[in-house]
Amino acid sequence: GNSVTQMEGPVTLSEEAFLTINCTYTATGYPSLFWYVQYPGEGLQLLLKATKADDKGSNKGFEATYRKETTSFHLEKGSVQVSDSAVYFCALVAGGTSYGKLTFGQGTILTVHP
Amino acid sequence: EAGVAQSPRYKIIEKRQSVAFWCNPISGHATLYWYQQILGQGPKLLIQFQNNGVVDDSQLPKDRFSAERLKGVDSTLKIQPAKLEDSAVYLCASSFQGGTEAFFGQGTRLTVV
Image (cartoon, rainbow over all chains, first blue to last red; front, side, top):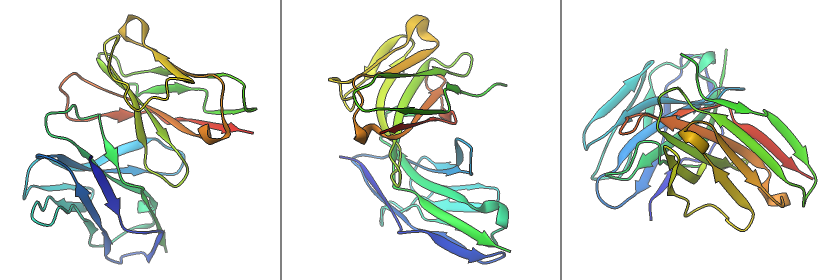
């Protein structure tokens, strides 16, 4: 079956530090890959997505590249802010399936200190 | 544009009681999903509706969980009877048919004591 594995958390960084959150996946066929973010007290929001190999998704300074050869979709940001503190979820949708039928990783808590 | 609405936000019940959650999707969204998010885990899909028909309920514990989407708009998820392990956040999401993004509500946090 499909599965997503994220790096162990929580992650604590100082403002302006570089962020990487690792994500690897197992899926049959050609899945689409997503990063969702959950800010405190809010619902899940789509942060970025990539639908085919070598695609790069980007939004709000965050980037992730769909690497089929390593089955990875690592999230990066060059300079984090306190406002980036949230829980980040990597997710996939199997090929040919509706985009809301998501398989999520366990989530990574990010805390950014001033 | 209004987002996905869920109620209640919080619910505490005793084990063996019943509980119901309500979801109102974004207007025009034909596809509706219910997810269960246990503390420390990612959300897990319970059921998917297309209009008022069930597309996938393979992960729904049907001995105690039920869901319906009358008239293809609002949806209700029910648990009867509740167990301690049902303590979780229940998320509703919706999307256009064939859409490329699912939109999530804020969820209902259920505590079973």
